Amino acid sequence: MYIYKREKNNLAQAKRMEYFLTNAQGLCLCMSGVLEAKRPYSGMYIKNGKVIVENVFEEIEVGDKLYKMSQINTSIRAFNCDDYICGIDLSKNEFTYCADKIKYKKNLAFSKYDDILCIEYDIQNDYDCSVLFRVIPLVTYKELLSMRNATTLRFNQRDIDDGIILNLSISDEENVFLKSDFLTYTKNPTIISSVKHEMINRNLKKEMLSEDLFSPGDFEITLEPLESKKIHFYISCKEFDISSVNFDDIISENNYVLDKLNSKIPEEFVELKDLAYGVEKLDIGDYMVKTLPYKTVQDYDLKIDYETNKFKFLQDLDNLTDILCAIEGQYLIFERYKEAGVVFAKIRRAIREIDELDVQDEECYVKIANLKLWYIEILNKLYLKQPAIVDIYLNFIKEMLDSVLNKGRQELVLSNILTCALCYNAIKVYENMISKLGFEDEKLNEIAICIKNLIIDKFWLEDKKVLKRNISDETANANIEMLFTLSLSYPCVFGNIPIKLLDTIFKELYTPYGLRMYSKRSLLNDGLIYPKYMAHFVKANLRQNGITRASQKIAFNLVKELIQDISKYVSGGVKKIYHENGADIMEESYDLLTNAEAIRLYDMLT
Image 1: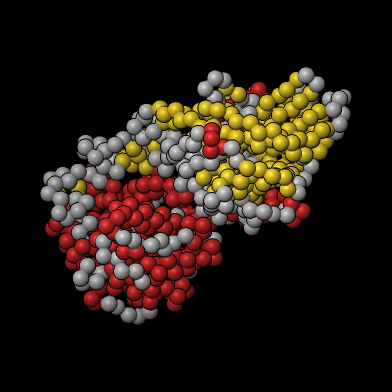
Image 2: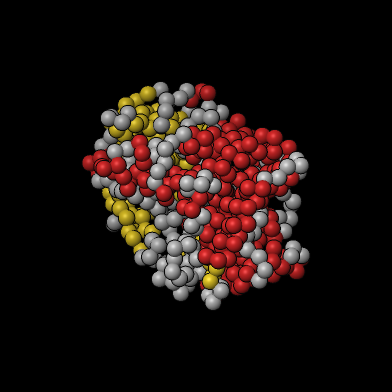
């Protein structure tokens, strides 16, 4: 986990990082390692895709000296507190500042049960005179990628016990509550115009985005000579009783979870501990599962907004599939079977609810089928650890297989190589489970044989050593979906095809930081690479070469640069997307599946 100490580390590394916290219920903090909001979606406190409080800065006033502890750029000047940062410990969410004879520690934490971001200041005044310490929240209100001008920032505010309530939207009844135990609020409305955010998009072009921030006023306290004090500042979108919030309890709760997590990881695997901690901070799966299922396209007036609603439904299915596929790296590797079972149960409920919907759109139908098939693949990972779950899930697996391989839709389902691979794998998972109970299913076995033959006859192109993505494609280049024919629990290609496929994948898709989705020779290749595929790539290699220390070493050399990058920047996690020329894509953030797959990759190599 990243730790910075003045004169020992380069602060530029902290600025490159993206630092996350979440309460796993939809609220999150997304900043740089020096608490700078430098992306259009970044902020100190985020709810429902809108940044409410973008940042919280401090000021220290000593006589005629004023120290501004801010990291912000405007159109006319830049503010930074680099000279005052003397320590950063992202494992403890702790930031230390020193301005001459006053030193303070800033500690951040989310309450998991109340939607409150808590900031603790531990301040030491070593001056022989009194010092004024201020906390200044900067507020904005925007959708993720759209900016509003200053007129929208003239919010209504009123004093309440221990702080203020700021009304962001009267029509939507959106408020932000700012409270403190010792700080006194002084109304001082200020607008900071043209705050700049620089980012690099997928096309490697720099974009300079601008917004206006609003400060409702100052929260301040006077520290007497040689006085030390702990004070707390709270931010929430709901009313709360400040006396019921105990910062020490929140910290203890977070530490307990992390200690329990790390206790299952050997001490020598430092990077794995950091990765596990990063995934714990990114764990928004519980929140996302609760939001499904969404309405399908049939629940809308398709004549008015068919494509928009279809796109949203497909995106929601992708999100749920990502949560599902993250279970192994997030829970199973650490033997957190109970937590995994909870997520499996929630996704099962979501699948049952989705099945009640009459989905006629072919693309939506295939996405639902893939969700079910991935469910069977990931559930098999838990089954191998805890065979007794077969009593709970066997009927559900058969139910999903029957619905996916429905005769009326079978041709559609088996028209894509990924779905073919998932179908074959799911059948073999089911066959293995029932064989242990003394049963067999001849019908499903026949379908598995047909799928295997179909892949050879209709998808495999011997001259190019590739598998077509879709059965209707007249020709094909290497694509990421053919990797899954090798990397699932039960591969569906045999003979000399696996070694030929691996050779093509290595030559056309592989880079040290991730895999391309399409061949570097294809017009579809956009230069973006995805670290999440590395675990599947390494598994396919280990399966082909056998799992020995020698083969693990060879595999490690394939991903060494990615692992080294993780060890440097793990506090932000592993990014969802990189660029093959090494550029850091700022418009894409770190996500749950990519980090969980990095843990799975690390586990295979140790």
